[in-house]
Image 1 (cartoon, rainbow, N blue to C red):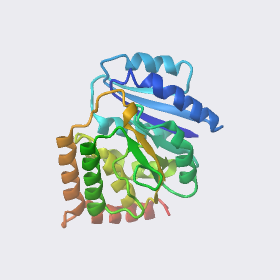
Image 2: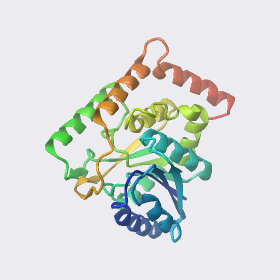
Image 3: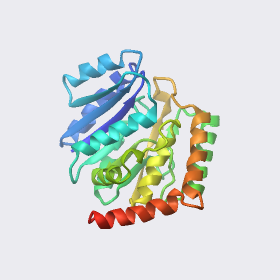
Image 4: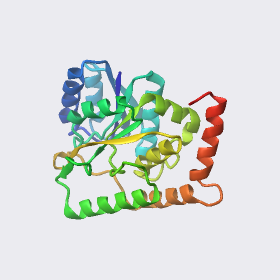
Length: 267
């Protein structure tokens, strides 16, 4: 099975564009799929549209009555996916604003099933790119990715900030079983959770890969939900937590995971 995860906040303009493409791509892949959407306190017709799609497609809706942010939405989506998946399943997380084209899903799934735990749709891999991104935003994105690569090096990764990713469902189940509610610990710090998941999965031995991807920012329908100052603060907090010389994530999590794996007969 393929499980699609969509965090959604005020996406009434995007959903009619994205959902038919998702249905077409996933149906064409010839295997069972389920789409889980977290409606994070939307104030427009997002909930109404999702309920209409759920009548004709395998769509499950998690509804937050108030806007809780990307961190809590991601937590709820991944926890629900981990309850539904089995060995061999793939979890795909993408944005709901029509900037992530579903046509890249088959190549992500294929790469995950070739032996990778996390596969990122990368603008910076050979053949990747982006459309509709201003020069300033592209510069900031490059700087952010360089910062992450320096402080959180992961072999083979060029792209750290894109949320369009595929995951080996078994590795997500392992992560949630081990970390519990702290798989996404920095829930209130904007888009920090996008990086935090990578770091936490690296610390429990995940294998990472990339596929080339074209970001279609020129198709973006809704306004950006990212608050740059909050996310920047989150990156700095996480850097401190990771590298703290007296018991930071880098040393503590690896040791605890080793003990946990031995106690739970994990490889």
